[in-house]
Image (cartoon, rainbow, N blue to C red; front, side, top):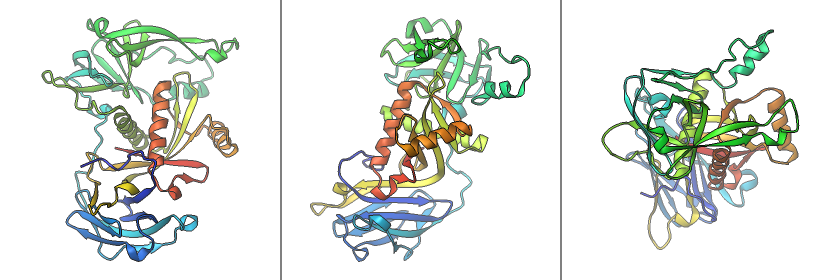
Length: 397
């Protein structure tokens, strides 16, 4: 079945639905081009499905296991300023208690010691590192721990020495892996020195730094950095890590936007759960904030179906909520380079109050992530695209 949940389109949204598992409730929005009045919309529940009948046809949405619609609970609600373009409904769902709640397949949670892994380029699926076995897989201190040390120590940082992996170690950062080079690196990787923070080079207190960027020899995609002569820093958005089993291609070699969306969503959820934080500052390696993210909830189940896909020619439009991972994170975001007065106030407030756990990614990846979020926003009804001075997006898990 076609994956319609976050398909970019130029047409209006025909049907949008968000179910909240914790609240056991949902929001249904139907465009006026699909139904002119609440009486035109009939919602019923079937066996693990939701059936929405409109004058344009029927839309069948498959619900995740354990989620059922409460018959007769769908009622119209005020649409506010969007009443001319949208119909809004509230509904109730029942969620069965399950002990096997969905878990993330993030690389940070799957790497284990004494297992054999293969590292592949996400862009071209070329095997970069073959049959790596780690004696130790250890987490690094989170985020800006060096800055915290500077605030607490009245003498030079006693931890100034870099934390580097030994030969058979894998160290896990927030968004990257540190591991040692092996003999195969020269055949699959290239290295190029690139300046970072050049705009501050005239300031003697902020000298221009240079990074040794590591790229895939096959497709030239930047994978990370060489932080020491024998140490590689690989970003989790650039590589696929899988158990080394035969010659099979990596399963996660999805289209780039979908891969990036799921990797970032899983990482934000992991950081939020482990650190009890909901604010994130997406930064480039030179420490410059690019994007501010505010995680609202992680239990949403969503589908956004373009108006052109609902019915038509007597057919039945259909979309499935039962995607490989049906949950999505609901996020507020703002771009740090935005020149709007309200957006600048938000950025200043976050900077002054040190709000936002740093999430460091290469500049190109930051730009890709922004595009993914803008594409998600474009699939939402007009009434849901903004909240106060923030923009709204969903990232699938």
